[in-house]
Image (cartoon, rainbow, N blue to C red; front, side, top):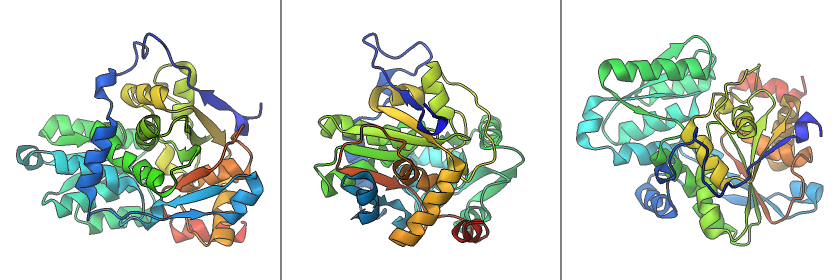
Length: 343
């Protein structure tokens, strides 16, 4: 099995999650996701689900694209960010909010906090796309750039919370964030009730966890497949090890998928995700170019991995209809143009 086709498969355990896992009562439920959807009415957009003739022809399956780039902040992250901020008490908001982000979660937090009358501090790695950094600041957040990786920004944000008493909001493992991200799947099941496979990117696990919660409750055997790249394989490595595992992150187009996985996100993935597959960084470039040429869609690297997995044949035993979540469009022009040129 090649690296591009390697899959971390989740095997249910009768005795529940391993000792490294968070308790199952920390997981959001379908009712939590439905409550989040009500909270998001009039705030987030119901994004389009569009059939892809090209991917359908390539796979021999009916394939649809969930276009989360049409969200107000350009990515799905607004869903979870708004839900968690809306659930905070006035006292918690008064303490101040802090988070760490590779970009899109910070955008969601900044937008949500401004609408709800507070102002977060957002720690980002210096390497975060300039477009995302500018927009975070434009939405009114206090932006703090940290040398190093997302994990370095995460550590700095946690230290800030400990020092100041600010409320720390995880970009991926807070149950309210996960419930908000799960509203993607609620919309998807309404738009395509017969869906049999859902393919989505995996970073810290909030999106795939939320999708999995909904799919297990509503899907009657729907397969949930996560995708990472070989350079952003934190969840893949952790599932293989059976515990949260630190991994090396190389140069990547998919900064939104970097960062280590915590115990809660891993435990939820073990419960509700069928497998996580890997694709190469070159496959992501090809997918970005293909989606632009064939579908007229601009996506960032993290958003392209699901399409890359189908284009490269990385998901075995595919059953349709298939829904692929394209999670965001926030890519710097300086990065997009060379990709489109084939440089």
